[in-house]
Image (cartoon, rainbow, N blue to C red; front, side, top):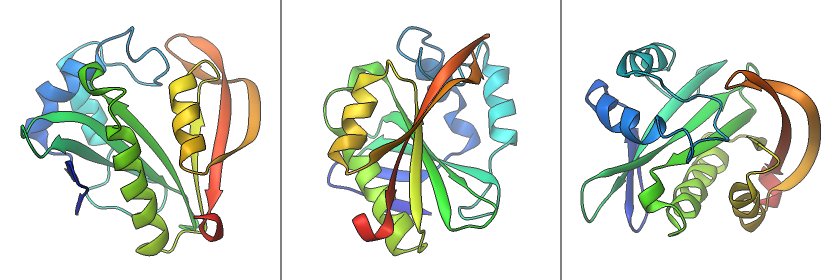
Amino acid sequence: MNLETKRLKLRATMPEDKSDIFEYRSDRETNRYQGWIPKSPDDVDVFFSRLSAEPNIPDSWFQMMLVDKESGLIIGDLGMHFSDDLKQAEIGCTLNKTYQGKGFATEALTRVVDYLFNNLEKHRVFASVHPENTSSIKLLGRLGFRKEAHFVESFYANEKWEDDLIYAILEREW
């Protein structure tokens, strides 16, 4: 599966992406709100082993690489989690810190949400966000997502319990 935007190519994750993923995902400060921070390149192999080879498989994650068309460099990744009933999908995006704040996440998420609603006919798309991740909260707001829930200490990540916010949008709102 491949998608495109004005500046990005979005393609399925491949084993040769391992070093790029480790490079930007292992930055603990930049990714402090992420649920997964690899400690070694072997952790990326474990990550790969849990991914689906194609989108829209019940109870699976499908991961796409964000490739800058101009430079050909991998600048981040975007995951889609498909629910058991296949009418809902969760999304999440991670960018290399060099590319943050330049509209790449907005561009990628807009294209993927559009794909989820218009190609895969999802009813609802949602995202899980750390309450202190104000950049992601603003991004979701720009895309029309609304805050649906605030769960207290419901998410165990990076060796501690964290609060979790859920933002969502319905197909008819898109």
